[in-house]
Amino acid sequence: QVQLVESGGGLVQAGGSLRLSCAASGRTFSSYAMGWFRQAPGKEREFVAAITWSGGTYHADSVKGRFTISRDNAKNTLYLQMNSLKPEDTAVYYCAAEASVPQVIHTDTREYDYWGQGTQVTVSS
Image 1 (cartoon, rainbow, N blue to C red):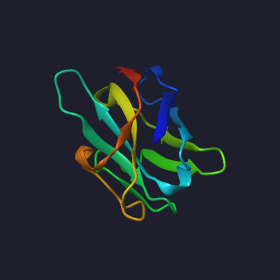
Image 2: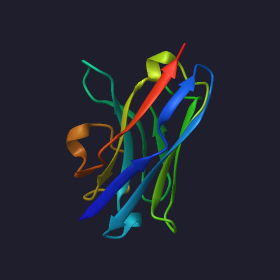
Image 3: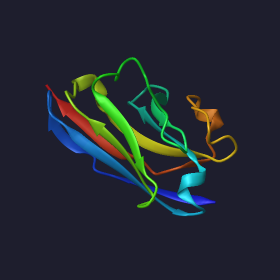
Image 4: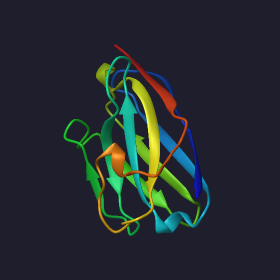
């Protein structure tokens, strides 16, 4: 089992940047595939980016070229660098861990086993 805690959210103006972190504790972090998702008010949780245990990445079209997912297995931490933020990026951002098939990318919420509590990102226009 793994526990996940997100941090780094906040209020930022459009065009600004934030870096989200997700600290993991418990079972070996490097054995999980990881992902970032977000949920805006009144909307379903949606995929943002994912990374395999070995560092392969995939980003949703809506954030490609602006967001970058990465991980530091030595620090048990997942990151999401967010640049050129837009008001439509406003949401609660969640990190998630997938334990069964860590060598592939996972984009569906139903594939993930563990979730953090979320961190709020608000982008003002």
